[in-house]
Structure formats: C-alpha cells, structure tokens
Amino acid sequence: MNELAELQKIDILSWLITGFLIISAINSSATIIGKFSETIGKPVKWVRKKQEDHCLLIKTSQSLDELWEQRKIDVEQSIKHDEILRDDLKKLTDMFVDKSIDDMRYEILDFASSLSSGRTYSKEQYDHVLNIYEKYEKILEENHLSNGKVNTSMEVIREIYKDKLKNGF
Image (tube, rainbow, N blue to C red):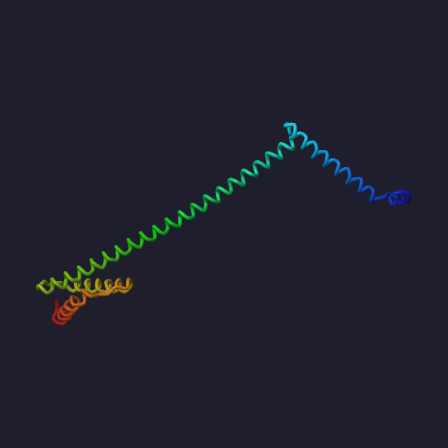
C-alpha cells in the first residue's frame, strides 16, 4: 500500500511539463543544427533528404501540370479530328445515297424505256424492278428528298405488268 501512496504523491503536471520541455529542446536543437549545417554548406543527412524530397515534390508537381496541359491540347485535337471525321463521314454517306438513288433511278428508267421499245421481260424481272422502286421510295423518304422523275416510268411499268398478269407472260 505504501507504493500506491507514494505514486499518488508524484506531481503529474510537473512530469508533463518536463517531458514537453525535453521534446521542445530536442526539436529546437535539431532545427538549429539543420539551419547551421545549411548555412555552412554541409547539410546533415536528414536535412539533405528533406531538401531532396522537397525538390522531387516540386518536379512532380511541375510534371503533373505539364501533363494536364498536354492532355488539354490532346483533347482539343481529338475533338477537332472527331468533327473532321464526322463531316467526312456525312459527305461520304451523302455521296453513297446519291449514287444509290441514281443507280436505282437509272435501272427503273431503263426498264421502262426498254418496255416502251417492245422488249419483253419475265415476271421475276418485273418483281425485281418493283422491289427496287420500293427501296428507291424508302431512301427518298429517309433522306427527305422528292421523286419527280420516276413516277411516269413506274406508271408505264405497272400498266404493262398488270396486263402481263392478266394475259400471261
């Protein structure tokens, strides 16, 4: 029991203050030694390491800034390239649609012209031209275009087709 009584007599506040003063003295001594070693040009190992870490941190920060700037430039270029590709694809698509329309129109007009000249065709050939005309109309509708050249030819083709269906091929 005497030990406990003696422990209760110890002044904890003075121990804490003493510990704090010792830690502060060590910290101050290390700072003074570090500053002195820097001043004379021969830094201590831990000061040198701290400086190297600081330099590395600055270099890393600068490199990161450069990477972000390069990323911005790359994104802008990518957007420009995407726009160019989109425009080129649109032009190519328009050219393909125009070519398809022209080819279908030519085939229908040529078929009607040959029929008017007296040439005979099989039922399958008529069906083929009628299918082409349906595709032709669909392409025109999808692209918001109008049909002004093929209607008369299709009327001729349909009349002759109806007549052939009644009288035989």
